[in-house]
Amino acid sequence: MSRPTRYSPPFRARAVAQVAQVRSQHRSEWSAIESVADALGISREALRGWIRQAEAEPEVERRRPSTSDRQQAEIRRLSEDNARLRAVLRALRASNGDGRTTEPGPGPVDGGADGRQAGAAPVERQEVDTRI
Image (cartoon, rainbow, N blue to C red; front, side, top):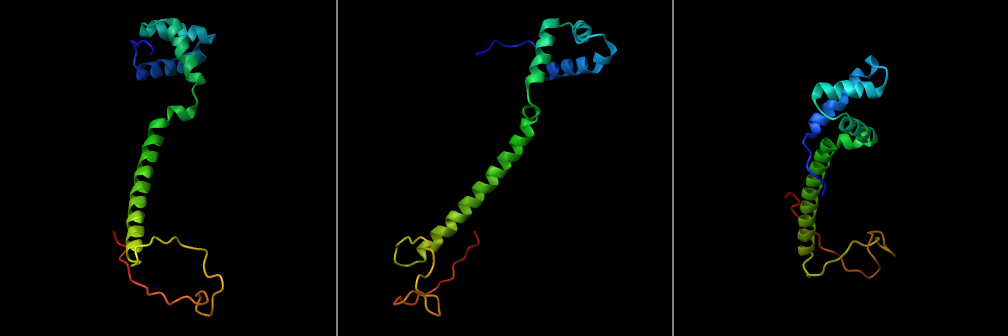
């Protein structure tokens, strides 16, 4: 486990952004780091490390919370849809009448004009309320 830090992530981000803002006013990146670190009262090496860390971090990582929120909402919606569809499937299986759970097949193999297999008995169709 890493040791606790004195500086919050928003403070670090602001310090790194300040260095980027004043960089053009200085001869080198190090002189910009010195200027910002002195103004904020923090270690120059700490600020340099934060800058390197921010450079190594992909842009996607910085935007993760909003993406995560959208993904969680989508997962919730899909879970609700899944539950609704499972309930409909249970109702369809229960309406089959004989207690068997039949899986949908590929369709009639040797169907006649009405689409039934040769020698198959007519199937009674029951209406099932799919609104849940």
